Image 1: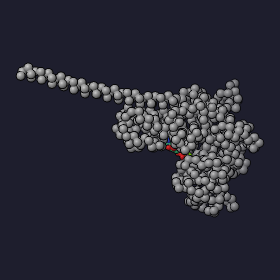
Image 2: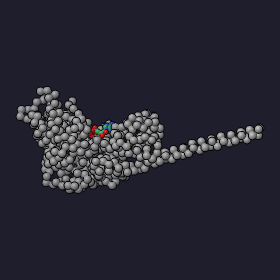
Image 3: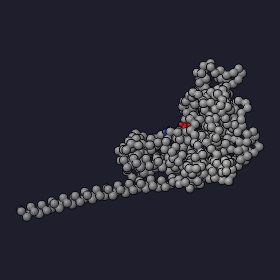
Image 4: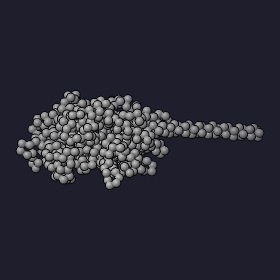
Length: 511
Ligand code: ADP
Ligand code: MG
C-alpha cells in the first residue's frame, strides 16, 4: 500500500509536470507566433517607408522633371501632362486699386461670396465681408440654369444686406471677380469655356459653354447690376492677392482638397501661342500641376491601387500623392494591409475596407497627438474604424504611417515649388541672370514670394513644417533664405475681387 502510494504519488507529480510543460510550450508558441506577426507588420511599415523615401537627391530629380514638363507644356498643346493653361491675366494688382469690388469663389467644398473695399496705396483690405456656405448637393448634378441661379441669388442676398451704402454709380455695373476652379479654355481674362467638371460636379449642359456668360445671364434674369470682370481659378486668385500685398509674389500654390499652382511666365516662353500675346510681356499660366507625372516620383503599391480604383485612373497622379482628398486613404490602405498580415488590430476590421473613411483632418489629429498614451489615436481608431483596445506600440505604428504619408506629400509639394522657381531662373542655379540682380561686386539672389493657400498647409502644422524644411533642404539655407512662402487667407476669392479692380481701373501699371 505504502509503495503503491509512493508510486501513485510519483505518477501524480510526473503527470503534473507534463501538463505544466504542455502549458508552457503553448505559451512559448504563442509568443513566438505573435512575435512573428509583429515582425510581419513592422515589415509592411518598413517596405512602405522605403517606397516613400524622398532623399534630397530624389527631390532634385523631381524638381528637374517639373521644370522639363513645364517647358514641354508651354511648347505645344498636349506636349506634357501639365496643361499649362493660359489665363490671359497679364496685369496683377499692384496696390493702387480703389473702390468696391465683389468676389465669388466656386470650386472647393464651400462657396464664398465676398466684397473688398480698396483705398489705393496697398491699403489693408478692411473688414472684408465674406460669406461661406456649402453648395447644396443636389445642385452639383442639376442643370446649368439652376446652379447659376443659385449663385446669382446668393449674390443678390449678399448685396441687399449691404443696404444703400454701396449702390453702383449711375449706369455703371458693379464688377465681379469669379473664381471658378475647374479646367477652362480661356480666350480672354473675362471668359472661359468649361472643359470638364471635376470634384463631384456633373452638369452636362455647362460643358462647352462660357461660364461668365452663364453667370451674367443669371444676374440679368434677377435684375442685378453686376457683371463678371474677370474669370479665374483659385491659384490665380491667390497669386493676385499675394501680388496686391507684395510685388515680389510671382507664383501661387493651393494645397487643399486638391492641389494646383500658377506662376508668372514671360510671353516669349509661351511658345505654343506666339503672336497671341501682346501688352505686358508676361502672363499668368495655370499649370494644373495635379496632373504632373514623373518616373522619379516615389510610388508604392498602395498608390497604384488607389489610382486604379479611383474614378479617374492615370489622371492627377501628383495630386493623389499630395492633396487632402487622398492622404487619409493612403494611410487607410497601409493599415488595412497590416491588419490583413496579422491580428494586431484585432479580428474585425471591416471599417478599414471603407474607402475614404479616414479624412485628412483625422490623419493630422493622430499625427499630432502628443499625449503620452496616444489617446487621440486610440479614440479615432475606436470611433471611426471601430477598432478597440489597440496596444500603445500599435498606436505608435499608426502615427508612423501618418508621418510617412504626410512627409512624402509635403516634400513632393516642396519639390514642385522649387521646380517652378527653377523654370523661372530663381532657384539660384543656372547661368541665366534672370533670377539674380547685380549687387555691388557680387550677384545677389532676388527675393521671391510664393503665395500659398489651402487647409493642408494652413491647418496641418507638421505638413507645413515638412514642406518648409524640404525647400531649405533642396535649395540650401543660403538660397532658400530669399524664398518666402506667404499664406493668403481666403486668397482665391479675395484675389478675384482685387483682380477685378485691377482690370477695371484705367491706367494700371503693366507687369
Ligand atoms: P478647398 O480645397 O475645398 O477649397 P480647403 O483649402 O479648406 O478647401 O481644404 C480642404 C481640405 O483640407 C480638405 O480635404 C480637408 O480634408 C483638408 N483639411 C482641412 N483641415 C485640415 C487639417 N486640420 N489637417 C489636415 N487636413 C485638413
Ligand atoms: Mg479653396
